[in-house]
Amino acid sequence: MKLQTQIPIFPQENQIDYSSRILLLGSCFVENIGAKLSYYQFINFQNPFGILYSPVAIEQMLNRVVNQRLFTEEDVFFYNERWHCFEVHSTVSHPDKEVFLQRLNNLLEKTRAYLKTSTHVILTFGTAWVYKHIKTNKRVANCHKIPQQEFVKELLSVAEIEASILNSYRLIKEINPEVIFINTVSPVRHIKDGFIENTRSKAHLITALHQSIKKSSTLNIQSFYFPSYEIMMDELRDYRFYKEDMLHPSNLAVSIIWKRFSEAWISYKANKFQKEIENIQKGLAHKPFNEESIEYKKFSEKLREKISELKRKVPHVDFQLL
Image (cartoon, rainbow, N blue to C red; front, side):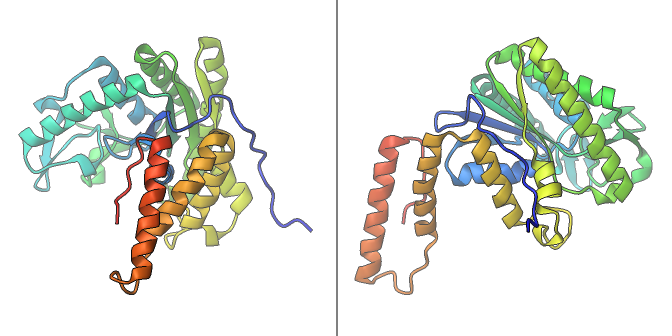
């Protein structure tokens, strides 16, 4: 008797290996996939401007990056003893305006340089709900805990999302014609919007994203879908796979989704290195009872040898040595 369904996953062409350069943009699920890529020592750059939940927030940021539109004093504001920008996450905010602007523009430059050499861009879309700042009449990427009455909440239409995603593709293609897009819808539940509202939001994202991918093939854009959301909803289907907040996937769920992602997008050769790296990471995490013991010193020396051997095959790997 089968008690679980499983979504078919097939190996893709142009898979990720240890020469790949991956840029990840989007919702907080980016951090889950990004953490796995970092753990296994893949070259990656994650959400330089912090979490961006909606397709229009990602598009807005890419517009700045690609067209080198620097941030100015008009783009920032002071609230709760810190300088903020409606286009970026609060984690980037700073108490000093000049430092904040310099940080933003440095990130623009760094992101553009990385994007030009990226092999893969992973876009994770979290919600179709957006907030428009009434005073400026602009949709924001983050409200920075400003009172809700200063915003109007809107649900992006399927057509708006599709246009936004396709424009994001075009922007990136301007400076990197060969890049490969891997798209996914975040399995994180945005219940603060409401249960029904969260379902409407995900439905709009999924519909628009598939339409965008279908159209991208006629535009000479390599764009693919990975079913993170569907794996969470259809394979895992149990609250034990969520964290205590019942919103975010648990560590076990993330590991399962990562395994499925690896089946599709991590090359066979890279997968072999992953196993070596995991053994080293586990060794580095080992806490001995006695660091001065002969046994532990032998263990540490063997681990250093493993790292040295791996670095000869994958030069960029960087472990914190014992």
